[in-house]
Length: 280
Ligand code: KIV
Image (cartoon, rainbow, N blue to C red; front, side, top):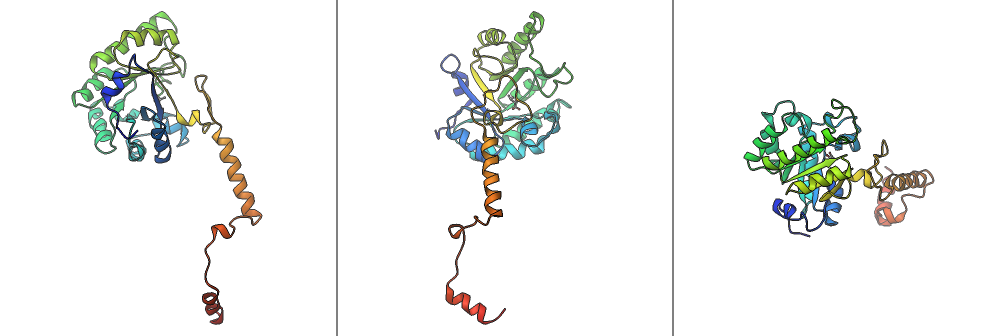
Protein backbone atom coordinates (compact mmCIF):
# COMPACT_ATOMS: atom_id res chain seq x y z
CA UNK A 1 0.00 0.00 0.00
CA UNK A 2 3.01 2.27 -0.29
CA UNK A 3 2.41 3.17 -3.94
CA UNK A 4 0.86 6.59 -4.12
CA UNK A 5 -2.34 6.76 -6.17
CA UNK A 6 -2.49 9.31 -8.96
CA UNK A 7 -5.43 11.19 -10.47
CA UNK A 8 -5.47 8.90 -13.51
CA UNK A 9 -5.59 5.80 -11.26
CA UNK A 10 -8.79 7.13 -9.69
CA UNK A 11 -10.36 8.04 -13.04
CA UNK A 12 -9.45 4.61 -14.45
CA UNK A 13 -11.33 2.87 -11.63
CA UNK A 14 -14.65 3.97 -13.17
CA UNK A 15 -16.52 0.88 -14.42
CA UNK A 16 -13.80 -1.39 -12.92
CA UNK A 17 -14.43 -1.33 -9.19
CA UNK A 18 -15.99 0.97 -6.59
CA UNK A 19 -13.89 3.88 -5.29
CA UNK A 20 -13.58 4.36 -1.52
CA UNK A 21 -13.21 7.76 0.09
CA UNK A 22 -13.29 8.98 3.71
CA UNK A 23 -12.60 12.23 5.50
CA UNK A 24 -9.66 12.80 7.86
CA UNK A 25 -8.46 15.87 9.72
CA UNK A 26 -5.46 14.64 11.71
CA UNK A 27 -2.42 12.35 11.60
CA UNK A 28 -3.65 9.29 13.58
CA UNK A 29 -6.92 8.79 11.68
CA UNK A 30 -5.34 9.60 8.31
CA UNK A 31 -2.66 6.99 9.09
CA UNK A 32 -5.26 4.28 9.80
CA UNK A 33 -7.48 5.18 6.84
CA UNK A 34 -4.46 5.04 4.55
CA UNK A 35 -3.30 1.75 6.09
CA UNK A 36 -6.78 0.28 5.42
CA UNK A 37 -6.26 1.02 1.71
CA UNK A 38 -8.93 3.69 1.21
CA UNK A 39 -8.44 5.33 -2.22
CA UNK A 40 -9.13 9.00 -1.44
CA UNK A 41 -8.80 10.96 1.81
CA UNK A 42 -10.74 14.21 1.86
CA UNK A 43 -9.71 16.83 4.38
CA UNK A 44 -13.28 18.09 4.49
CA UNK A 45 -14.50 21.40 5.77
CA UNK A 46 -16.80 19.16 7.85
CA UNK A 47 -13.88 19.53 10.30
CA UNK A 48 -15.89 22.60 11.39
CA UNK A 49 -18.76 20.46 12.68
CA UNK A 50 -17.17 17.20 13.78
CA UNK A 51 -13.85 18.41 15.23
CA UNK A 52 -14.06 22.12 15.97
CA UNK A 53 -17.60 22.20 17.41
CA UNK A 54 -18.78 24.93 15.01
CA UNK A 55 -22.32 25.18 13.59
CA UNK A 56 -21.43 25.76 9.94
CA UNK A 57 -18.70 24.70 7.55
CA UNK A 58 -18.48 28.35 6.45
CA UNK A 59 -16.88 29.12 9.80
CA UNK A 60 -13.55 27.53 8.85
CA UNK A 61 -11.01 29.35 6.70
CA UNK A 62 -7.75 28.67 4.91
CA UNK A 63 -5.64 28.71 8.09
CA UNK A 64 -7.62 25.94 9.77
CA UNK A 65 -7.88 23.89 6.57
CA UNK A 66 -4.15 24.08 5.84
CA UNK A 67 -3.28 23.21 9.44
CA UNK A 68 -5.40 20.02 9.30
CA UNK A 69 -4.40 19.12 5.74
CA UNK A 70 -0.68 19.27 6.56
CA UNK A 71 -1.21 16.77 9.41
CA UNK A 72 -3.13 14.41 7.10
CA UNK A 73 -0.56 14.63 4.31
CA UNK A 74 2.24 13.69 6.73
CA UNK A 75 0.50 10.38 7.42
CA UNK A 76 -0.53 9.33 3.92
CA UNK A 77 1.55 7.10 1.67
CA UNK A 78 -1.08 5.56 -0.61
CA UNK A 79 -4.34 7.49 -0.86
CA UNK A 80 -5.02 10.54 -2.97
CA UNK A 81 -5.29 13.54 -0.62
CA UNK A 82 -7.96 16.09 -1.52
CA UNK A 83 -8.16 19.45 0.25
CA UNK A 84 -11.64 20.89 0.63
CA UNK A 85 -11.64 24.57 -0.35
CA UNK A 86 -13.39 26.47 2.45
CA UNK A 87 -16.10 28.99 1.55
CA UNK A 88 -13.84 32.03 2.05
CA UNK A 89 -11.18 30.57 -0.26
CA UNK A 90 -13.19 30.91 -3.49
CA UNK A 91 -16.80 31.94 -3.03
CA UNK A 92 -16.17 35.43 -1.61
CA UNK A 93 -13.70 36.38 -4.32
CA UNK A 94 -13.11 33.99 -7.18
CA UNK A 95 -9.89 35.86 -7.93
CA UNK A 96 -8.50 34.28 -4.75
CA UNK A 97 -9.44 30.75 -5.81
CA UNK A 98 -6.25 29.96 -7.77
CA UNK A 99 -4.00 31.40 -5.06
CA UNK A 100 -5.76 29.35 -2.37
CA UNK A 101 -5.87 26.15 -4.45
CA UNK A 102 -2.10 26.52 -4.95
CA UNK A 103 -1.61 26.82 -1.17
CA UNK A 104 -3.31 23.42 -0.68
CA UNK A 105 -0.89 21.84 -3.16
CA UNK A 106 2.32 23.68 -2.30
CA UNK A 107 2.00 24.18 1.47
CA UNK A 108 -0.15 21.21 2.48
CA UNK A 109 1.04 18.62 -0.05
CA UNK A 110 -2.42 17.85 -1.45
CA UNK A 111 -2.99 16.03 -4.73
CA UNK A 112 -6.20 17.88 -5.58
CA UNK A 113 -8.79 20.33 -4.25
CA UNK A 114 -12.57 20.08 -3.98
CA UNK A 115 -14.98 22.93 -4.72
CA UNK A 116 -18.69 22.96 -3.96
CA UNK A 117 -21.03 24.12 -6.70
CA UNK A 118 -21.93 27.84 -6.52
CA UNK A 119 -23.01 30.42 -9.11
CA UNK A 120 -19.45 31.11 -10.34
CA UNK A 121 -18.25 27.53 -9.88
CA UNK A 122 -17.38 26.88 -13.53
CA UNK A 123 -15.33 30.07 -13.75
CA UNK A 124 -13.37 29.30 -10.58
CA UNK A 125 -12.88 25.62 -11.51
CA UNK A 126 -11.65 26.51 -15.00
CA UNK A 127 -9.09 28.95 -13.56
CA UNK A 128 -7.76 26.34 -11.13
CA UNK A 129 -7.66 23.51 -13.70
CA UNK A 130 -5.79 25.84 -16.08
CA UNK A 131 -3.03 26.09 -13.45
CA UNK A 132 -2.67 22.29 -13.56
CA UNK A 133 -4.40 21.67 -10.24
CA UNK A 134 -6.80 18.68 -10.26
CA UNK A 135 -10.31 19.59 -9.09
CA UNK A 136 -13.06 17.42 -7.63
CA UNK A 137 -16.52 18.94 -8.09
CA UNK A 138 -19.38 18.72 -5.55
CA UNK A 139 -23.06 19.04 -6.50
CA UNK A 140 -26.43 18.26 -4.95
CA UNK A 141 -26.55 19.37 -1.33
CA UNK A 142 -23.71 21.85 -0.95
CA UNK A 143 -23.39 22.57 2.80
CA UNK A 144 -21.52 25.89 2.35
CA UNK A 145 -24.56 27.47 0.64
CA UNK A 146 -27.34 25.14 1.85
CA UNK A 147 -28.88 27.79 4.11
CA UNK A 148 -29.26 30.19 1.16
CA UNK A 149 -30.62 27.41 -1.10
CA UNK A 150 -33.51 26.10 0.96
CA UNK A 151 -31.77 24.16 3.74
CA UNK A 152 -30.19 20.77 4.29
CA UNK A 153 -32.49 18.72 2.05
CA UNK A 154 -32.20 16.17 -0.74
CA UNK A 155 -31.64 17.87 -4.11
CA UNK A 156 -32.98 16.79 -7.53
CA UNK A 157 -36.27 15.35 -6.34
CA UNK A 158 -38.27 16.89 -9.20
CA UNK A 159 -37.56 16.69 -12.91
CA UNK A 160 -36.47 20.32 -13.22
CA UNK A 161 -33.90 20.30 -10.39
CA UNK A 162 -32.69 16.83 -11.43
CA UNK A 163 -32.04 18.13 -14.97
CA UNK A 164 -30.04 21.00 -13.45
CA UNK A 165 -27.85 18.51 -11.56
CA UNK A 166 -27.25 16.45 -14.70
CA UNK A 167 -26.29 19.63 -16.56
CA UNK A 168 -23.95 20.74 -13.75
CA UNK A 169 -22.20 17.35 -13.76
CA UNK A 170 -21.65 17.49 -17.52
CA UNK A 171 -20.34 21.05 -17.28
CA UNK A 172 -17.91 20.10 -14.52
CA UNK A 173 -16.61 17.22 -16.62
CA UNK A 174 -16.27 19.51 -19.66
CA UNK A 175 -14.33 22.12 -17.66
CA UNK A 176 -11.83 19.46 -16.50
CA UNK A 177 -12.89 18.05 -13.10
CA UNK A 178 -11.50 14.55 -12.49
CA UNK A 179 -14.43 13.42 -10.33
CA UNK A 180 -17.61 14.75 -8.72
CA UNK A 181 -19.14 14.30 -5.26
CA UNK A 182 -22.92 13.84 -5.38
CA UNK A 183 -24.43 14.71 -2.00
CA UNK A 184 -28.04 13.88 -1.07
CA UNK A 185 -29.35 13.08 -4.52
CA UNK A 186 -32.03 10.43 -5.30
CA UNK A 187 -30.30 7.16 -6.24
CA UNK A 188 -31.78 6.99 -9.76
CA UNK A 189 -30.73 10.56 -10.55
CA UNK A 190 -27.21 9.68 -9.32
CA UNK A 191 -27.36 6.69 -11.70
CA UNK A 192 -28.28 8.90 -14.67
CA UNK A 193 -25.45 11.32 -13.79
CA UNK A 194 -22.96 8.48 -13.28
CA UNK A 195 -23.85 6.96 -16.64
CA UNK A 196 -23.77 10.25 -18.53
CA UNK A 197 -20.21 11.29 -17.64
CA UNK A 198 -16.81 9.61 -18.03
CA UNK A 199 -15.36 10.77 -14.72
CA UNK A 200 -16.17 8.99 -11.43
CA UNK A 201 -19.05 10.08 -9.20
CA UNK A 202 -18.53 9.71 -5.45
CA UNK A 203 -21.80 9.56 -3.54
CA UNK A 204 -22.77 10.57 -0.03
CA UNK A 205 -26.48 9.99 0.43
CA UNK A 206 -26.69 9.35 -3.32
CA UNK A 207 -27.27 5.59 -3.40
CA UNK A 208 -25.56 2.50 -4.74
CA UNK A 209 -25.14 3.46 -8.41
CA UNK A 210 -22.33 6.00 -7.88
CA UNK A 211 -18.80 5.00 -8.88
CA UNK A 212 -17.63 5.43 -5.29
CA UNK A 213 -18.76 6.30 -1.79
CA UNK A 214 -17.63 8.81 0.82
CA UNK A 215 -18.59 9.21 4.48
CA UNK A 216 -17.47 11.56 7.21
CA UNK A 217 -15.21 9.27 9.25
CA UNK A 218 -16.45 10.62 12.59
CA UNK A 219 -20.00 9.54 11.60
CA UNK A 220 -18.84 6.05 10.59
CA UNK A 221 -16.94 5.66 13.89
CA UNK A 222 -19.72 7.02 16.08
CA UNK A 223 -17.55 9.94 17.19
CA UNK A 224 -20.05 12.68 16.38
CA UNK A 225 -23.32 12.65 18.25
CA UNK A 226 -24.91 16.05 17.49
CA UNK A 227 -26.88 14.74 14.50
CA UNK A 228 -26.97 11.60 12.35
CA UNK A 229 -28.08 11.96 8.72
CA UNK A 230 -30.15 9.10 7.19
CA UNK A 231 -27.31 8.19 4.81
CA UNK A 232 -24.81 7.44 7.58
CA UNK A 233 -23.97 3.86 8.49
CA UNK A 234 -22.27 3.76 11.88
CA UNK A 235 -19.81 0.87 11.99
CA UNK A 236 -18.76 1.26 15.64
CA UNK A 237 -19.75 3.44 18.60
CA UNK A 238 -16.38 4.87 19.57
CA UNK A 239 -17.97 7.58 21.73
CA UNK A 240 -19.28 4.87 24.06
CA UNK A 241 -15.92 3.04 24.15
CA UNK A 242 -13.95 6.23 24.76
CA UNK A 243 -16.34 7.39 27.48
CA UNK A 244 -15.98 4.03 29.23
CA UNK A 245 -12.17 4.21 29.08
CA UNK A 246 -12.10 7.76 30.45
CA UNK A 247 -14.45 6.83 33.29
CA UNK A 248 -12.21 3.85 34.15
CA UNK A 249 -9.17 6.15 34.22
CA UNK A 250 -10.97 8.63 36.47
CA UNK A 251 -12.04 5.89 38.90
CA UNK A 252 -8.55 4.35 38.97
CA UNK A 253 -6.98 7.73 39.85
CA UNK A 254 -9.60 8.47 42.51
CA UNK A 255 -9.19 4.99 44.02
CA UNK A 256 -5.36 4.99 43.90
CA UNK A 257 -5.26 2.13 41.39
CA UNK A 258 -3.31 4.13 38.80
CA UNK A 259 -0.38 4.48 38.45
CA UNK A 260 0.98 1.14 39.67
CA UNK A 261 4.66 0.16 39.83
CA UNK A 262 4.31 -0.81 36.15
CA UNK A 263 3.87 2.85 35.22
CA UNK A 264 6.38 4.33 37.69
CA UNK A 265 10.16 4.92 37.73
CA UNK A 266 12.42 3.78 40.58
CA UNK A 267 15.55 5.06 42.30
CA UNK A 268 18.16 2.89 44.05
CA UNK A 269 17.75 2.62 47.84
CA UNK A 270 21.29 3.97 48.51
CA UNK A 271 20.59 7.13 46.47
CA UNK A 272 17.34 7.68 48.30
CA UNK A 273 19.14 7.20 51.61
CA UNK A 274 21.65 9.98 50.72
CA UNK A 275 18.82 12.41 50.21
CA UNK A 276 17.09 11.43 53.39
CA UNK A 277 20.37 11.78 55.33
CA UNK A 278 20.76 15.35 54.08
CA UNK A 279 17.42 16.02 55.67
CA UNK A 280 16.18 18.22 52.84
O1 KIV B 1 -16.55 18.32 4.08
C1 KIV B 1 -16.89 17.14 3.84
O2 KIV B 1 -16.75 16.23 4.66
C2 KIV B 1 -17.48 16.85 2.54
C3 KIV B 1 -18.05 15.47 2.33
C4 KIV B 1 -19.38 15.41 2.94
C5 KIV B 1 -18.05 15.10 0.91
O3 KIV B 1 -17.53 17.69 1.70
